[in-house]
Length: 181
Image (cartoon, rainbow, N blue to C red; front, side, top):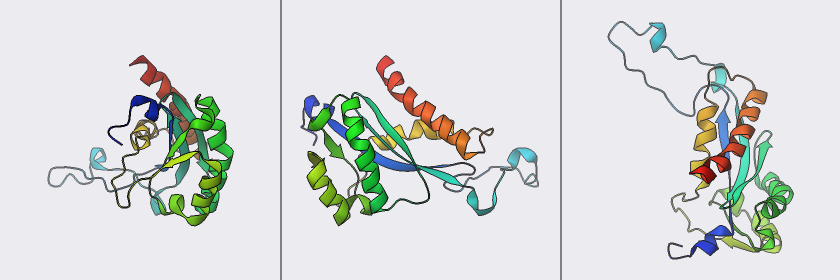
């Protein structure tokens, strides 16, 4: 893929999903402190039982801009993934100016490579870019998720609707930011 020219990449739609926690983190946080200061308020992080709740989102983008952003209720499986592709991929392609000539780039998540998904893509997607099994995740959308994720870490955000509003706003702002730089 390294030797592909720019016109190849201009017609690629990158897709993926990500989880945004409403409260808490995806991992452990460490706090450095002096002895006997463990209960000092500046060293404490608030917590929620069961780790807080999160919001799953699916999104897509291309060189020309940001495509749809979809909020996923409950969990995502291959059937929900096919429905998201059905409802959003064909809408996003014209919006991104690449109509029926687009190529789809997705990672090797098991729900992306399930037989039902592969069959749907065979009949509904002009070209799917294949990645090798166990390859590192080179999908640039992983970098795109970082900006909205930073914005949802604000302490005044505690409801799903607030997170959705921030994610939607930040998703739209990403392309405007890249166009200025």
